[in-house]
Length: 72
Image (cartoon, rainbow, N blue to C red):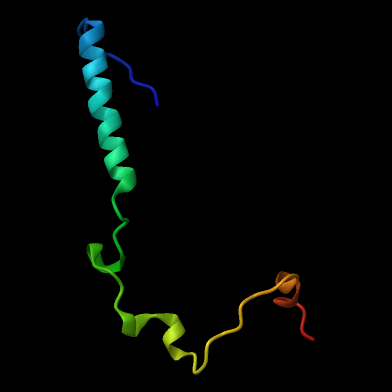
């Protein structure tokens, strides 16, 4: 993160205070949950893609990435 002073002559204490506010806001934004679709509301269970599966899908195992493209 880079901060540049474009006007004025702030003291070290003023710069430290401004930087503390910027870092606190960045930390709060990083901890906040990301908004879901439709403006911040979580996705409804009825629209989940795994709802259409009739049975649970098997967990992928070793080498499963190769089987996803080649049939057989």
